[in-house]
Image 1 (tube, rainbow, N blue to C red):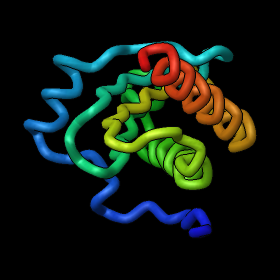
Image 2: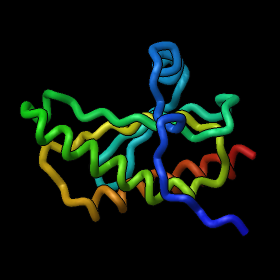
Image 3: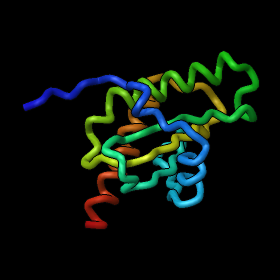
Image 4: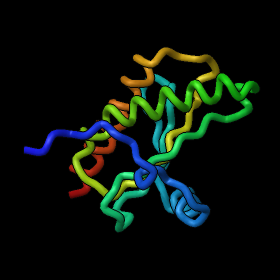
Length: 126
């Protein structure tokens, strides 16, 4: 059995204008219970990887320090929980929607609920 590696290399980051445009045009948006994050996902991208990007709107946090803190917390929660995804080949955009800074534990739980929701959608589609 291969242990889960808790890493987040460059190849698992969603970047590139065409990939992001395709995700926003064809992806499905969903909310996570708790109201901290919203996510957009596109399944069956053809790549053998789950790629992710984070967005924290400037409208919510004017200071870059606060925005970057929330992005770091979301990326860390994703890095620790990405092994729970049932399948590969997802492109995910996580959008932070809460107007206050929340602690890491709350973000960690929200990312877990997001992954559970993605797994449930996959199992219902199959």
